[in-house]
Structures are given as structure tokens and as C-alpha cells.
View 1: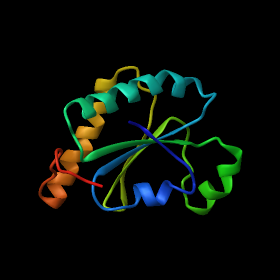
View 2 (view 1 turned 180 degrees about the vertical axis):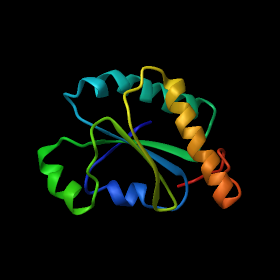
View 3 (view 1 turned 30 degrees about the vertical axis):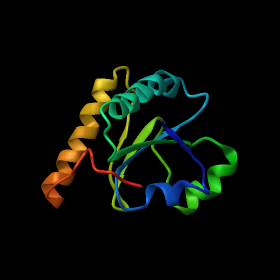
Amino acid sequence: MIIQLTPETFFESVFIEGPLHVVMHYGETCGPCKITMPHYEILEQHFSQYDIKNVKFYRFHHWQPEYKPFIEENNLKTNGVPTFRYYYMGEKLHEVTASYKDPNDMKKVVMEVIEGIEQTMGSFDLYATTN
């Protein structure tokens, strides 16, 4: 299940130890976001289907007017949407602004981030139970 983030839940969800957190920053009326969202959902379902617990998927409505102060105060501005940010152990590891038409392309990026974690931290267990 993709979790919808708000300013109130952003940090308590994403900046915690444990899994790799993938956050899609999107706009509700954004054309590329509308194209990408179903593929993001397929990607999340793929990970869930194989019982991969150490990768969590979120979305954050970046164009919500009332979120603007939160975005500015916390340096969460993007160069556009959709933007995907990858957080692990409380740190942002990677960011890409792109529209995807194939969930396999998004999966490749997730796996590249995981490979980077393994290279710098030793190992990453996709199937580990996390909070």
C-alpha cells in the first residue's frame, strides 16, 4: 500500500531507521504525474507480492498550497514533479525527477539505490521485517 504523506506525518514516516523509503512528490493536476502514478502503484504491488518488507512507498502532494511553508522550511523543494526521493536511515540518498511509463524502469532505479546501500553499508535485506 502506498502511504499518503502530509506535513504532519512526513518526518515520522520517512526519517526513521529501517527500510528504504521511496517518496513520490506529485501534483494532482500534473499530466506526467497522472501517467506515472499507476506505474508507481504497480511497482509497490510488485514489492508487496514478493513480501519485500524493507522498501516502503509513499506519495506527497507537492502542489498543495497549504503545504508550501512546510516544503520551504524543510528544504523539500523540487525541480518539478514527479520527483522521486529515496531515504535510508534518515538520509536522502538519491533523487530523480522523471515521468515513467514502465514500472520496470522505476524498479531499476530502486535496485540501483539498494546496490549503493550495499556498497557503502555492507548489506541490505529486502525481506527483513521493519516497522
